[in-house]
Length: 223
Image 1 (spheres, one colour):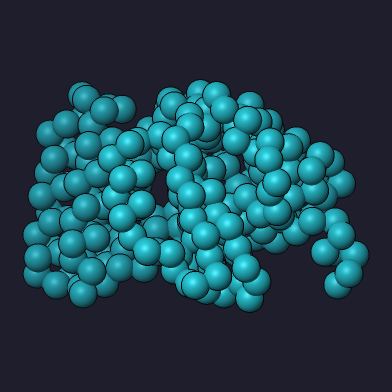
Image 2: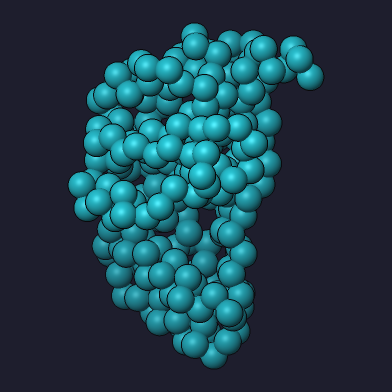
């Protein structure tokens, strides 16, 4: 919302859906991003209440860093709703499995492979699609005769982004150990070497993400 609202030159009413009351409270304390923007929070579990949440007047459905967490069944439910109601859809920052790290390390491929396996585990919506999410969504839309646009939106972190790099390495190490506990010593060694490189100002990371846009049929016809 805070990125899109100032870029949409029309009066807007946003409904922000979240399950965690603490996150709702934190968001509700922040002002709306523009004078012509009304904001309301709704507490709901999207895994179960998707159809209910989208039952009212809706023109745009948008999400960030969500598609890679959901299951194939859940995504199919969403796509059916989007097509049936001809809604605009923008899903940004879906992880696609691509990770490039500098300086290179012999265990990079193994660790990221374990991370990508972890990405496909249960995240609250059933077995997650993980890096395959955008590809699967485009296939669902194509099978229904729909058109979607996909563009890269990779994270790129350098020496000035040391905090982000440290968070990524720590999170990846935890996920990799969860998948392959028998490789704990090797993964921890990889983690420590990566952190030392970051502290020395040598670390760089590119993390692949994709954005997907589906425009309503009426908008495509007009253009």
